[in-house]
Image 1: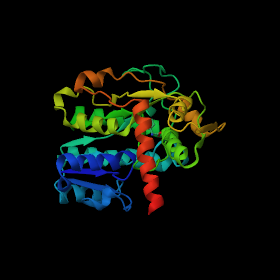
Image 2: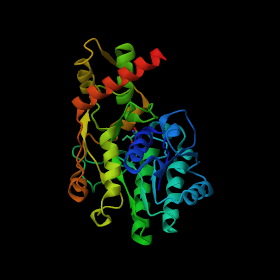
Image 3: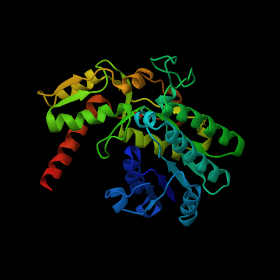
Image 4: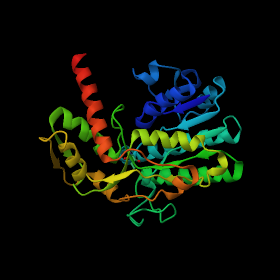
Length: 319
Ligand code: VAH
């Protein structure tokens, strides 16, 4: 049985639906701190769990005889800067609760996402290596780097089978943007369809590593399905799919919506966050160890996002 904690977030939403397709609805329990009216809640088991409440997590792990936990609850980069003490508490202690349940042998396997936010201003920006300088300057990045250290420690010291990947910015259409710096690349599609224009909070040449959601979900499931002895890195694996700037994604959108216009906001606090992150990532270890490969590039993603959002917005208008 699988428990998804944070199942209503950007990754959790699509991950839960895909896990139910693969393993059966009855074998995937979704949970979050809120209970929205969506497919995750309405199409299978759902429980309200506060990831910070150890007793609650332990209760549902035992109630459903959970074997694997996908822990996705966290405050993302921009939100975490506005509530740093809570972000540290949520991002770290939710991880400790799940690591400790595994240490006590109450769960067998954990997936926990890290991020390119673990890299900082002194990290090499192009094709950032798996092993390099890591001086994160954001609350979110500090919590992800620390979390990686604890994942590796619990694996080495207590034999906990925890697996992790460093996600780039993730682009998806089914869940609303969740307070990330890279979420401009989600917002831009909504605005392009609704208003044929977008006021971007990052500057035109801000190049960032990005990934379409289907590749992100594949990575989580593939690393969890891989035989344990292939997972040689127990901090977190670099992952890469594509890199683009606001200028480049705007030009790709214009191929579909010629009248689309982009303007740029100056001095947004998220520019400082984005400037501290790499331009591109070397993910050779993940490709070698457990056969990771991305399938979607900027062109694929843009046409899918516009098509899916067009449908969604049209259906909402009809409702
Ligand atoms: C954020 N989407 O923007 C997340 C991600 C690399 C960025 O961690 O905070």
